[in-house]
Length: 175
Image (spheres, rainbow, N blue to C red):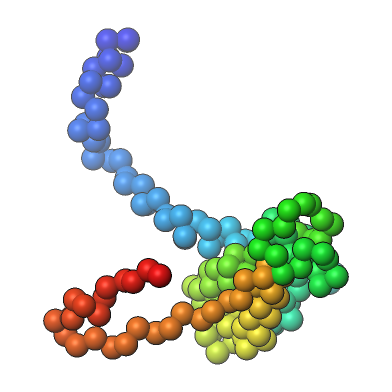
């Protein structure tokens, strides 16, 4: 019996039985995270009193979910009264709260927005695409940037290049 086992190992995966079915490809990291986020949000809605059906979910439920997630954050956000407010690298610890980082929330909303539509939701009724969510994310971004003393600057759009490209326009200059 052990010789049969060794033979199977030696022959490796080239021996395929015609009745074997191929497994579906492993989902990407993004797809796995999107599924986890979607399940977490669904569980959050179920845990509300009274439970909220997904069909009745609106942007207020999404905003409440984002605020709820703050308790699990790992980003120190200094309050205006803190002596380290506006300092990018404070020299000592303080009692300011830990929050979800703006970038994490922004990425989460992007995944949930896609998951909503992939699970049958209409783009017109997508609560994750609401203007209120964009305003909330903008306020979080600005608040966190001020608390760190690093203003958020929107990236400038690159000028439209002609086909064929001009190599000199893509040179990066450091000052």
